[in-house]
Image (cartoon, rainbow, N blue to C red; front, side, top):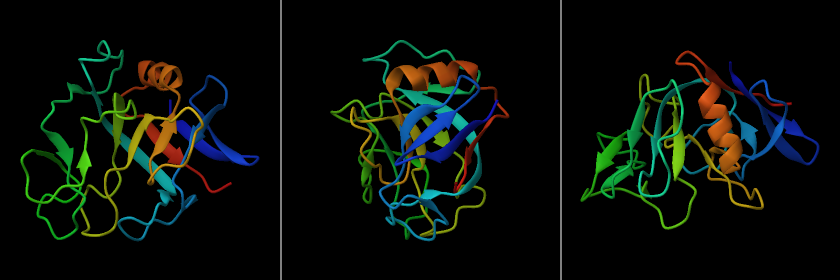
Length: 169
């Protein structure tokens, strides 16, 4: 069952068959993602690659997707000139900006979205995740974010071939 993200009045919603739920998208809205750091949530249909979670904060979420616990040394490379651009890396690492082990709860559980990963195009955009939203659903840097309970509910229903469908309407 795909998760479909659409504009819903002044905000955005996500639906995976359980009815629409509020979500946050990038500060640049939904559109054609062209470059790193543009704040755009990429319009299109994207596979869900795997789920990462903080085992020190949550029990392993129920999901049929591949599941891996996040370590303190985990980060995501978002430096376009780096050979590991848009990939998981381990700290210490010379050029990283996106630590997965955060002080806040936003990455306590996340699904890695298959955007710009097959093949990776340097500078097109990285670290697109489905992750935990801030309480007020403020915009993300380009990810889709849900309330923790909604995210866990969605993950429990996803199958390995399910996708994140981001629409413009």
